Image 1 (cartoon, rainbow, N blue to C red):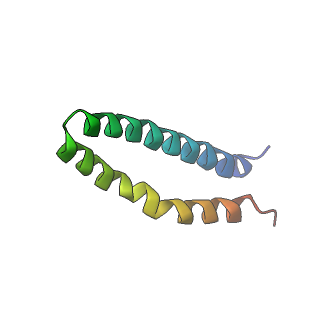
Image 2 (cartoon, rainbow, N blue to C red):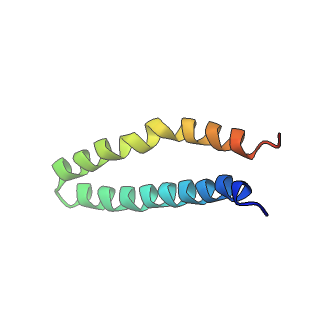
Image 3 (cartoon, one colour):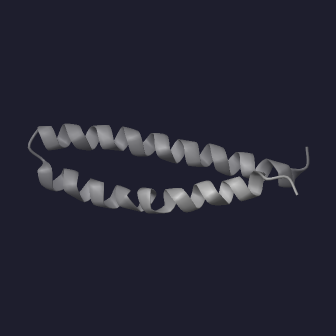
Length: 69
């Protein structure tokens, strides 16, 4: 398999890891919110917003990279 074929798979796995980390961080954020750290929870949710904003672009780009020429 040429190295160029590995790039879309690698980026896909990195994206999966990113989404898993987002989910784990959100669980911790919800816990913090429930234990009186609402300001911290809100700051984390705001920071995680970047993942949501970029998710659709990442999915579309991966789809294009994985489409055979």
